[in-house]
Length: 324
Image (cartoon, rainbow, N blue to C red; front, side):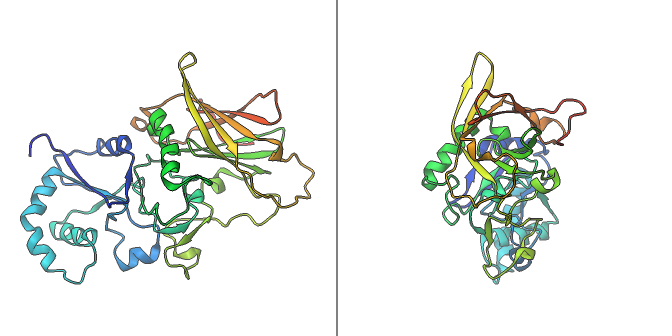
């Protein structure tokens, strides 16, 4: 086949952010043997299958020269593994015979979980979002919307700045003593008090393990519990609209507060309950992954209304860090 560099596999319920898939593959020499993907979020799944297997639901890519070598031996190879389950399991076995290891890219997401993806999508690793899977099993990404409409909402931001979709940034409102986490194009979370960046970068367990009797030790990554203290429950603001301001050359995203009951808080500090919307300003940054990976910085901007918070998200200045 002429002008083919990669073969990409996914399930019928895999959603790809194609621009980010291309960004990831561009890092690698397609004339070499590469097998690129990621493992499961479930430690048990990875034990039953393999930590060195690229899961088909999250999608994986095989370079053209490697695909040619695989084609020569695949029929006989899979016959040697009648006990394996699934095409991705068999592909990994054949890769092992070819001596080609898995090159892990953590933006491929199998999402072997149930429940609410807020914890995972709200604390995405510093890498391009390449794929989503099992969206028919988990709750809709945006509450109050169907799964399909929620995806359309997410992809409105993908069209504005695909490289930055659901990239997390942190800032602190020093006057109100709030911690703010922005998952760009998806959700803003405001919490009372100071929560360190180290904690904010760790997904909260809003989701359940693929093996429902398993506890948090059965995840293949670090997590933190959902806050039980009534004053530390986050106030959630989901993306409601986005547009590009040509005059200012920036993306304006409006995030509206998700209306849910909050427990009574005895703290005398300012409450985020008065905020009804958060406006996030950002410039498109299509070349961000050409540089060394770094989380965006976030700044709280002045606002004339207590019901609206303005934030700026973008490249960090020299010496800028996330601190109160």
